[in-house]
Image (tube, rainbow, N blue to C red):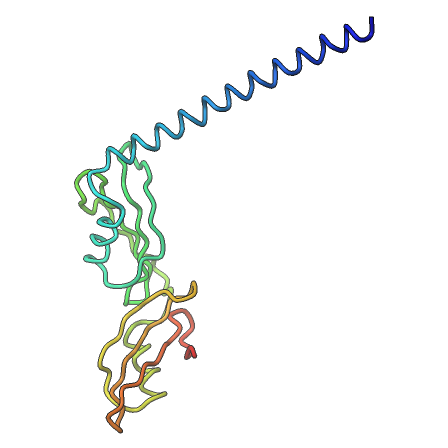
Length: 166
């Protein structure tokens, strides 16, 4: 008698768990389908949206993702600008146009000019080029200098604190 009750209880538990698994799978499938449909609705790629943002603000992309804002899908792109500030761009996924641009008020990092000055203090000469890049998870200015002895030197300056990177 105990065996039959236990077997009935076990069977009930198995049926409950399997129906929950099916329901969970259906929810996951619905979410995946919605994500794919959203990406298919986008006329421009994430890469193109990054290019649009960088066209409006020279610097390095910190983050980029697709979001639904006020019923419209946009790519939200954060750029650490050469001015040392963080710029946030909302790029419309269909048109590729910037629909919002916000600049954080606080200074997030040193400016390109300050980085060049720091590099010139380390190595006397003339700045040939400079660029903001992300290396090993850290934003650095890569400054190429033609030194007074006519050699080319590359100095890396941490964009957050101004220290020389080795």
